[in-house]
Image (cartoon, rainbow, N blue to C red; front, side, top):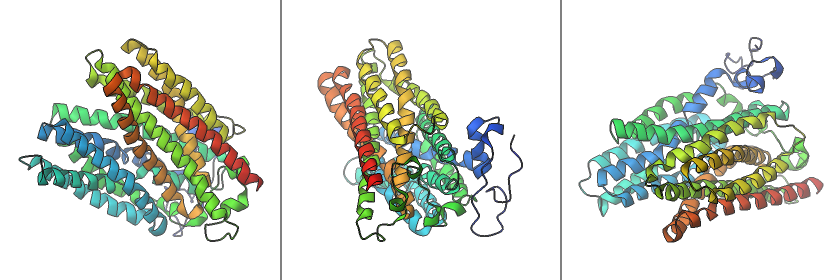
Length: 455
């Protein structure tokens, strides 16, 4: 195992307000392999908090859907409530990221935890006390649901910002390992969250999942907010680290400049580069939303539409495992090449979803497809972290997360429309097209980054 953490370790008391970057140990000596570097850098408590503090986000949409549908006896009202949560999250996340960049993560997370807990309580109250769900009563429910999403703390994106700060003087493999872990944590929570909602709502009460989400938010998010690692991310722009710079895809000088520093327009170029991974995450979200809808239509052919969530979870599990594998990919395999290779395989596997004629065969296809989803997400987050302006890391990370949310709504709507007209055979086109768009965006990103590095 590793030696005792140095005094600069986040789990030991820093001697100054702004700790130095933790010393990177030898990963070969850890029983955890490359992942042994993570508790050494951030402390075991950070890994635990970072995993479970993001669980409420994975519970809110399905929790609102379940609560409102049960209380109103209306699938439409429940769907509107879930959509309001998603819309609020997509709009609120970048604002929280911007505020975290300007004011620091600690205060922003503490305030958002309080506001989100109050918003969840408001949603529970207005839903459970409404006699009817039309007119003003429904407007109150939807307003509360939107506020729940808008104020939801963005643990995953802001945890990534902390890792970037802690690994900025380490080999690129350290950040790769951290982002692989983060991708797996996201996948696991978005599998466990809906499953936990379904279990608690069916066995105990429909309001319990949201009540639990509120309790987890006020406790775990607050603990995450004040964890010692926040000192690294809150030091300002000096905490920025370029991943693609060391990959020879972006020149170091261009990355170091801020929007207002460069009279030649590198700031606007940097902004354009940020839009590419954001667009990639919109495509990823479109893939997710359309796959969920397609699986609902597919399982409905066998009279088991309610089992579609379990089918989707199978893909999530293999995606989580594959995300961990990115830490072991060779460093000479550039991130833009990783994006294109993963997206190409994802396109082929998504197109293969049209082939299964039984649930068992579909399970095999989803297991195979998940192998390429996790690495694609990890890679896009890596590229996004590299092209982000140093003083806007939180903003860009939350924009990437919002892209997934917005894309999920797009994919659900497109696939739902096609499924209504032509069933699962029509809806399956959307995931394949979304993966193909990802491949195109990967190629465009590779060309754009090469152009910047040569400029």
